[in-house]
Amino acid sequence: MTDQSAGDIDIEKFEVLLSAGQIETRITEMAEVISKDYRGKRPLLIGILKGAVIFLSDLIRSLTVPLEIDFIAVSSYGDATASSGVVRILKDLEQSIQGKDVLIVEDIVDTGLTLNYLVENLGSRQPNSLKVVTLLDKPDRRKVKFEPDYCGFIIPDRFVIGYGLDYGEDYRQLSDLRVLND
Ligand code: IMP
Ligand code: MG
Image (cartoon, rainbow, N blue to C red; front, side, top):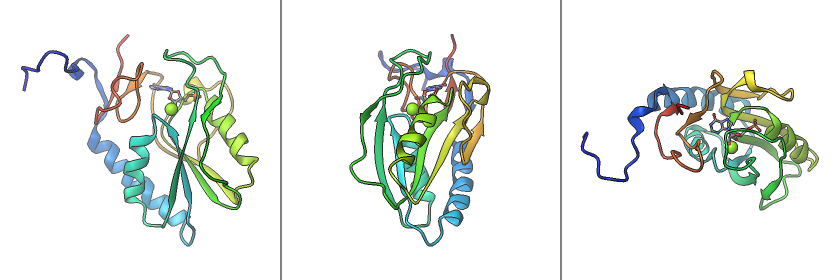
């Protein structure tokens, strides 16, 4: 349909970087590896709000091991695309992670500051193990050394939207990952 009602978002102007199908296929592959690595365990997946909710919900439906989920929210450096480097916990976990096999689930690693902070913070709570899975990685933008344990796609230094990722809270609902034109 080309005749959209007034107020609908015009997604056609944003180039598709990864289609919904490509994302789905890759998540199935990642889930196979992760299920194998956690066989015999019951990992606690911690989704980083809000960007990772779509990825987490698709990922867990492809995992075959029993699991739990929880969420944590950290400051997102304001509504802009630039990172200030200050990380703060806005909403903490509901439970202790002591002795648990924790897998942090993130949408995208950019400067690395968020995960660098979270790995240190959650690591100090004595989990049995602590790993990170990210759907996307923009290694060109790193400000601190950080390497995810599992990564869906390495992408170029472009600001992307959709599949949970936002620009000023918009566009999280898109099924494809698209590039925000500047
Ligand atoms: P980092 O701390 O710089 O690694 O940033 C991670 C967070 O910045 C992600 O969880 C996203 O919320 C946000 N972010 C970084 N790059 C993008 C992007 O291209 N699109 C949307 N959000 C992004
Ligand atoms: Mg995020």
